[in-house]
Image (cartoon, rainbow, N blue to C red; front, side):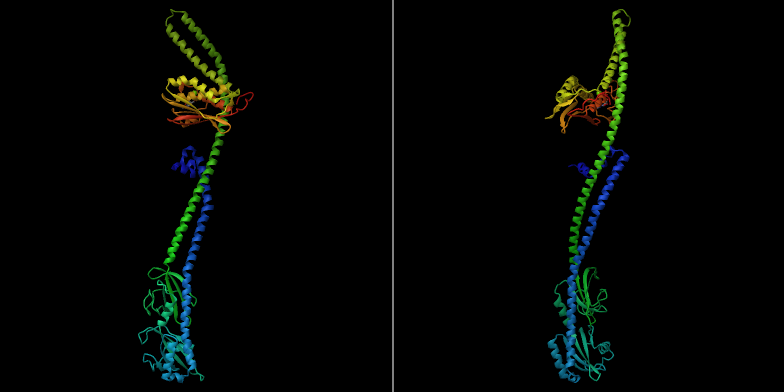
Length: 580
Ligand code: ADP
Ligand code: MG
């Protein structure tokens, strides 16, 4: 298929050949076409694109939820585990203070033994201290020399007095090793109290955290409220370093957000506060996998959407084009029909007028003819008449002109006579051969080839023989006159549909300019000057109409012309009184 043909399927003909239609008319069809295309796009393509957008958005959300869910789980599990880890140790201390009296614990041996038991039962204990209500550490067992320290002015001491328990942040203290302190207060019956204070190394936390998530790309750690790392982070460095990550205010519920970290990388960040402690657990996973997946999804969705949009657009263009095309052709046919009607009316009146004129002129012509003949006889009878030859020539040219005039008047009369029709069965092949036989001599003389092609199965038709002869004589004659020496005229006879036959007379002659095509069927329109009468096609047109047929012409200047005469198998019975 050529590009033109392909375009024709989706763009109206008048887009491609704007000259075929007049300006305003064309604008109308273009407008109808454009509106219908826009309308159909609005109801078909727009919803599709919106749906695809919604689809994409939802799919992305689902994907995100999928990436977020494991982090959620990890955070809440870790939170619970760490919380449990701390509570377990607090409970152990509470159990000790309930079990043992102040005096028991005051005994260094018992304190050391208790410490050993705690170490064995729960890992992570480093030392144990006994503090009196005034803040003085009166008992201590552990690797450092902290006996006798006064804690009364320290914040944690005030808090444990107030609340009963306390978990400290991670700090290095005197020892230079990160650790945390948990303390419990025990009320005595007399209203006074003492405090048991234990130090834990942060290894315990690290183990809990490590046990929860082994995947190499994730980073799990604890921070305090001020954003200081409490355990080591893969990404943000050692414990007690400050973290370059602004966290939303943490709550006890685990939260997961997607953010860009300080290195501009997109990460999934989960966090949760650990109750009764200053810690917030944080888990960070790169969210790269999410974007890769969604990119795949996006391209699939995009390809699908673009594909469907293209198909729909193509269909819309086709439908709009064929619809507007139909309207266009229907309109043109209607206009043509109106023209034709007007034209045949005009032809009829011209025909009657010319028949009248011809009739009137015939008599004087006959007289001129007769008298000129007489004049010639006289001239011949006077041999010594001066300038006899000159007279002879003059009268000869009068006779010729009269002959020409009578040809015209006879044709005009014929034109009027064609109002009456005589129907008989006709084999068009035979009829065309007769016509060609008639014109054959001239064709051979001018070295023009004429051929007749007859298709199989052309039926016999019922029509008027003499008039059809006249028709084809006129058309073939014109064709012969249009071609040069060595030209070609082809005649093709074939069935046309069920009820008709068509005869195409094609020549490769001079062609007819566009502005003349409208006029060639008018009586007296001729481009042949003195050689033409301009009646041939006018008469032809009248006859064909009368016989219920139609005639059409296509021509290109310099390339040739083809006339197509289509005739019904049965011509309508002649109307009485004739004349249209
Ligand atoms: P005439 O032949 O006497 O001029 P017609 O009615 O037969 O009158 O034809 C009218 C005009 O149509 C011609 O003068 C000619 O310009 C044009 N015409 C008709 N047939 C052809 C043709 N086959 N090729 C080119 N021009 C044609
Ligand atoms: Mg002619």
